[in-house]
Length: 380
Figure (cartoon, rainbow, N blue to C red):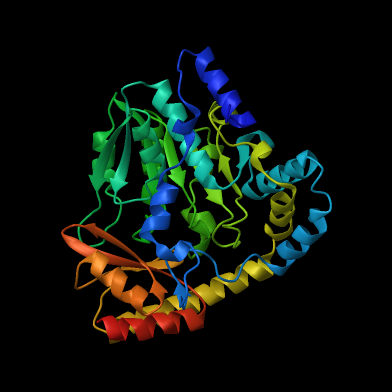
């Protein structure tokens, strides 16, 4: 039987609840799709700039790399003790009890676990979200039979239409998903409006706020809704080490929420058992590495300002970003633009919404941004 221990446990749990699902149903096909849609996610000859996956080109931090080297000799040990230390450190930083933190191998597995939990908790329900936004949670829910109610972004600013989303909340709604700052637009929601929205809506239905890019905002504490969690509201907040900490390939994330909700979600995925000794030790080393965080933010801001100037010089507009990427409208079909940029050795992503094709560019090193600028001149 080609079942690993986690697949077996999940299958056993499902059979125990009368929900028999093949272990393959737990795979994430979007990863294969991403590898196909973004050639740069695999090694490619002639690639000058990989600006398609919103990675931090400066991480992991030197402290994290040192910790990985030191931890490798202890790879034969289960890292339970270190997982507890990391959980304690995060809880203290966020100002919540340790029971309000759920660790995981990246925030992605937590999105999928939440999708499964709320889908089977309310059969026939639907996830409510903005459109476009980051899709992993909704796609996982739809794959298991849930509906997906999409609310278009506001015209012009392409922000979440919180008023319309609140109107759409109904008995059928199983979960409300908000990505802030949003991916792929990079737009950050007004913090006062978002906190008020979460407070009102969470009184009716659970709210999941994905804060993967919160560290790139001008004030992460101000723009976060973790205060809503502290007030006991029915809200979950996802964080990741993939962006500002440069640990996308090491896989580290966490969820902040009510203990009973986290315990229910962990039955479907997530938990410190997913984490390796090297990843946990790297996270412990860099979580409060203010010097590296400041360095990453500074380099990101430098690259973003260069990108803004480059787009203006070539006659493009763009959406102001609170993230490590920028979205701008393009003058040709998305596939054609992506292909031409790849011919110049630069990988980027494309979207189509509101009757317009768009390009999303991740922030790289200055050499990578200059490669993008050179390629854009040719493609334009």
